[in-house]
Image (cartoon, rainbow, N blue to C red; front, side, top):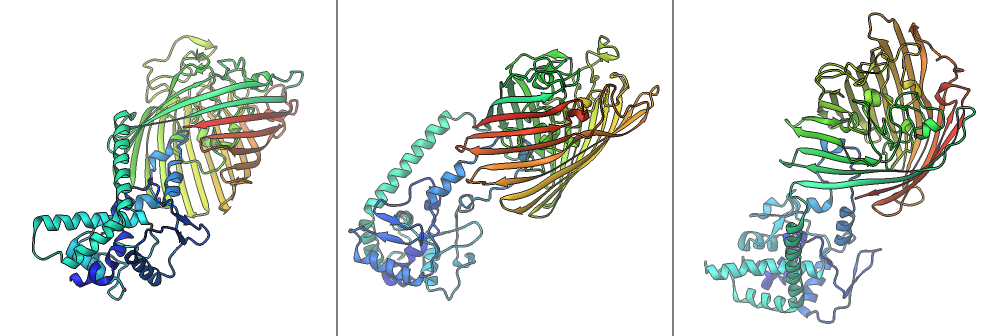
Length: 639
């Protein structure tokens, strides 16, 4: 067997070894390229300037080049690692941990496993020119490794440092054989060749060992000072200037305001497959119970209670400055717990989740590319289907206690459902009234009484270019509201009926995104909300409809930048029954429309700037209101 080793095969065995050795791939962050080796990025070939190469190494290299004259282009391992490290979680949409997928990067797949027989390597055949050399290294010396998918990849390019790493591995193995003195495993010719190679690559071997020592020291330092072994901290900071004009007649334009929202998120895993998400938030939006100080109230477009409006930005909480559970005020930039949710798998296709501060969007994936409160659309209208927002499902403050499941029926189909209740921590409804017929705990009390919602989403991906989401929600509200925060008619959904009247809602909707190309996608949604009085003393019903369509662009003008243009109809009463009014008193009924455009400039991997504007035609479905324009300049920091 020794004739197939270095002494009798001109060193071919070691060159075959280099392409698949674990010491090389275990150190992806090291700078692989030698300062004396210039890489031509266009053809991937080396231009060697090292004057210290011996004839032995030159002969080995020439044989390898002749046998591999069709070798693939050389890619930079350092650049791969840099690109992988730059991925940053936005920590805004938390449904992703629920459906965590295995990493697909080339680095993670390049972990090598020791093999005991060359037959374990699926891409090495007996008629390959280096088969016997590989067989000798595997079965005689045991110093070769393959990739997890049982391939060897023997025809890829290598560097001098990779050669040195492979040589070092076989030196260690042969030293072990010599020390154990188990038969005539190492011949004199082998040792002579090894000595020459060791002398030739002495500098590289020393550098490699030094770098390993440095990496080990750095790793020890990081482990000693890391935040947590089980918890990952990330966050998002949004700073935005917002200005508007138009609104209700005889109202002056509001001043330009500067607002912020800060979120810190802790994601903890106890088993490696589960996630405990804890989120802290602070913001300086104003509003309170009567909307005082909010932009939409200054425009005259807000409801008289809870400041619902179509003029709301995407990153603004649904009930700014207010704890809607008890109608108590929340100070500007007060730190709040806005997310507390535990997600854990119970079977291969079934995942459960539960928490006391959760939102529907935590479990339901956003089908439209316009969703992203800090990154994409600038209005509340564009981001999600209104059915997902029903009952405070996207309040921005983790309004509800919720529990549900995710059933992955197939790779292209999954079903999700949840039950949520906003006042699960209250034992009794308050007897005190905030306004006639409305308690100071307007959403009720108890886990299975008071306001609640059951929501489902079926997500279907019939092709890689097409995503479809179908939604249904059944809600009960202690008061006469929709709970979406999308229009002023959200409050007093049954127009002409007392605000304290309980209602039930059955809502259906669908969202579709069609990617025409990797950089252009068409997206839209449609929704219908059916509202009925839940009181035996009142007979009233109303139907609301809404739709949106738009075009989303990726890598527009520059990689990383995105843009969107969209148009649609905000929620609008299209039908009524019983004592409910189609047009609220004092309004001049007309169909409202929403037009929006924005462009996100990715300044760095962690900073983006998004200028944009949206125009409201016939705001709140009332032609008495002037056309309203809201402009936003949003800066988002992620870490």
